[in-house]
Image 1: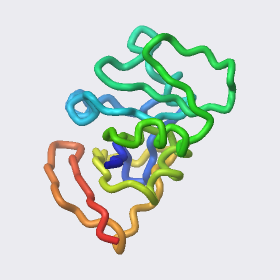
Image 2: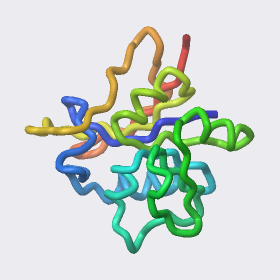
Image 3: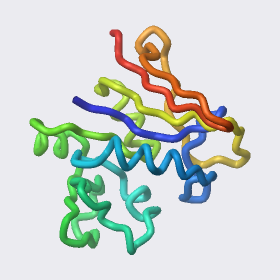
Image 4: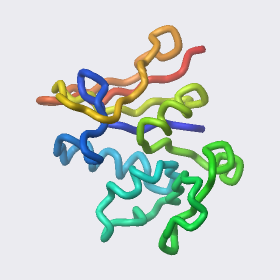
Length: 158
């Protein structure tokens, strides 16, 4: 199974200045619960946005997609040239698309589930966006409203 995990604003922003433009502890806790024990596929910029003292994220397989064969990664992290190579290497495991924009754009057509935090904000000067969610392809299977954000799960129907 392939799941995309992201927090997105009302205008589909996922990142500004190579950082998450909000601080929602409940979102971080939920992300840790959803991703624990799974394979996280992320781009180089997402990897670099994680504080160095927290990389690799524990109790997960950290996969970084970059064509730079000399990109330095610590023990516990893997590098692949493409998403397809990473998926093939972990074909019998649960895979999480973890960002950024290019990763989400390439994985949304093969994902089974979208586990999102919808942040009740519009972010100005955003640099990274989550792809549009086609209502013909995705249906809401769970929704949990909070003050300022909503946890929402979509499942593929087509």
